[in-house]
Length: 168
Image (cartoon, rainbow, N blue to C red):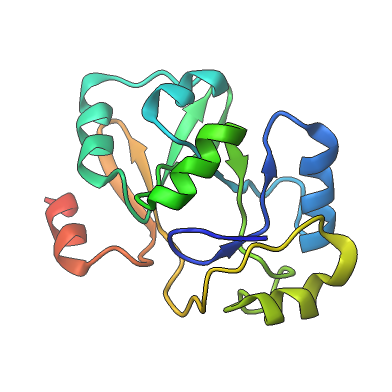
């Protein structure tokens, strides 16, 4: 469990199938419900088979780094990615590579605002807790890019002025 740029996240390496399965089990999350993947730079999208066109790149450059998760096509499925602004989080990502990072809570419960709440949810079932103060903000804004247009799936933390701009 670590602080992200929005909420506390239950994180693990995306390339470790057992870790990903453990995260889904701990969260009691449906297998067909994707989790957000934190990346340290846009080039890491290629590790997931994401191919972006010029318009998509322009949109990504507008919203990243920041509290915006973007659903992108990966072959015959889609995944959501976020490039955070936090220097501490980016330093972790540079060491670990991409991390699956759903919010630190079992499905249907409120995200943990601090380590104490996270420990109440998960106890000794996670390997480590990294404190980062209280997180009282919103989840990331979740958008999907479809034929160069933006669908807002979850308003989240992004200021309404930016959402308005994106809708134009």
